Length: 95
Image 1 (cartoon, helix red, strand yellow):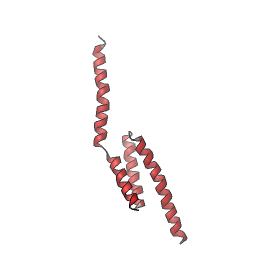
Image 2 (tube, helix red, strand yellow):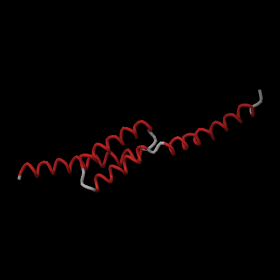
Image 3 (cartoon, helix red, strand yellow):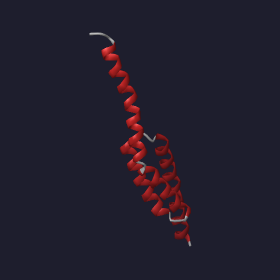
Image 4 (cartoon, one colour):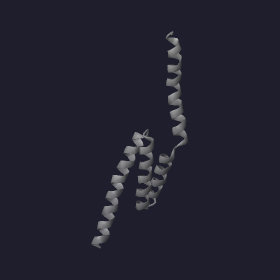
């Protein structure tokens, strides 16, 4: 067979896969919405709620596996929030 019989479907497939990935990720912004909700909870001082929402967002990010930067941000936020919660608990314990 001729080479262009294989070349055309290969090029079509290479163009179609990124488009489908973009459409799916555009529709599923659950991790981003959970991240913004957790950020609002954190800014309002509800640290425990923010931690649970960040953990939910982290689970959703791990399901999608395309938001590596968001995953790193969530992990950093969780470390900081857990440190802040421990500090608050220690301050209340000493009083």
